[in-house]
Amino acid sequence: MARGQREPKPGRYPVTFGEVELLRDLDRQDGWMLSKDDVPQSYVDLQDPTYLEFEYVRLMADVIDLLPEGPLSCVHVGGGACTIPRYVSATRRDSRHIVIEPDGLLVNLVREQLDLRSVPKLKVIVAGGREGTAKVWDGTADLVVLDAFTGATMPVELATAEYMGDLARVLRPDGTLLINVADGKGLAFAKRLLATVTSAFGHVALLAEPGIMRGRRFGNLIVAASRTGLPLDLLTRRAAGGLTQARCVHGEALTQFVAGAAVIRDGDAVIAPVPPPAVFG
Image (tube, rainbow, N blue to C red; front, side, top):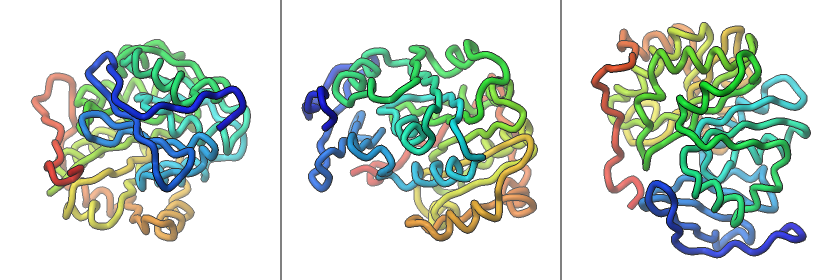
């Protein structure tokens, strides 16, 4: 533990939107899992913020590591335990973060129990994703990370063309958007989200473990998008060579993958997929 930081206390804690559980990792002295409704939400190692437990978070880190060197100005929609802000601050000194998180009591819990104060240049906006994004200035972010879930489901209002336009507004012209989406058999929701992202960004890639990419099992997929370009060759090699041995789909292959799926717009009757009980059981 860092000097002056008290030991976190495992247990269940009330938050604004229900209850979360803080669990110690028995295999890592300073590893902690934050879960809600028995669904893992975040994992942090308080001594080593570069340690990333979840496969999809490692894929996001692969994209981030390939961005131009130097500090980043970041907006994170969805806070949790702030795993990615911690990672970026550890790997890119002097980076700045705006974290948008609707649950104020969860923010307080992470601040007090998981040493959020140790992350420099981090500001939290307690608001929903769309409300909080509207407060961010135009063209100020190098990186936007959209990783917001209600339980294990992505809020549909954060997957629409209108919201993608607002995220594009926040990004600098050469900025990068990362989205974590969960889907299962058929990947119908992920395909519609990709159609929506490609309507706002000219360069898009999809990363996931092969079994998830084929729709064989429910899991997380990472969408990377930019208006100016992505390091696709490097990203493909890095994803394939990592622990997840993930695929990177882009270009014509991505167009075929989306296969005419409709863009999601405000007011559309779209239901985000819910994982089968066995996924977390």
